[in-house]
Length: 392
Image (cartoon, rainbow, N blue to C red):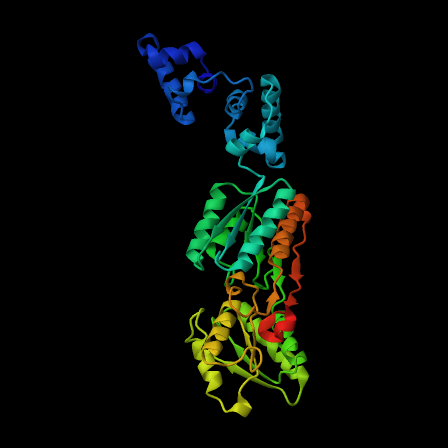
């Protein structure tokens, strides 16, 4: 009731009379008190709570004659407040003995100790690793991380960005599958919330970016097969409209070109394949004459690689004896087969941590911040599917 009384400019006793004996109160006063009750969401149940010993932001706003949002700006962004208003609010704070605690900051001013992360697919462990790395770095900085999954849907992604805006997060980490120039991203940036993009190179200069070197991913994979003595390499991919797929294929091509004569590359178009189905690729490979059949298969994802291994095994083809196989995206979902799959580690945890560090720099530097592009280097993880039992 204290907050209602302060906002309405009456005594606590008057508020009590409005609630219990309205016939004793003048209509104009009743109207003021009821307006304050509605604005605060006050209920009779809340009136039985102990009186607060620390004044609230509502009381500060009432004494200063400003909105709660203005009080929040004075506390969190004083540079955005006119000097005269700043002085009034500071005087009210001093008069009431107001002190800011973490809960008040969260509820009334927007929790600027909170950042958001939108990933496209939480089934893919790359994005789980990104979230884990971001969480670790955020926790070290005493910042909370909210994680959402867009299910590869731009409209859902924008809805999550709107949710973060309503929660007044201080910054956003975004891992899109396509160009992050959606309406939601542009809106968030216009409102002054920094956005760091992960795993997609848009070529834009209006925000920081954290990337894995996907061309190096493909290059490492092909170099590994060449160093094992393989000379007929098949590149099997799906979702060929995605940027990482193009870049990994470019890396495979570069390694094969560097190897020179005596090395052949077969690119199997897999638009007809599902993510989990390597049977069609295996059939196309085995339909070739023996002297043209690949002795190495590099798949764009680990799931596809595991599916190819299974399909070859079912056709009594030795892996890696006859054909070495590996994936490219360090996806733990594909690692449960009888033959452990060689892959390329994408260092997702380092990507997530680097993105949080970039946000922290932007918070600290404000208008002086220069947007940066951080590229995380991948590394090879050799297992039995390419190197045989010695890899263990």
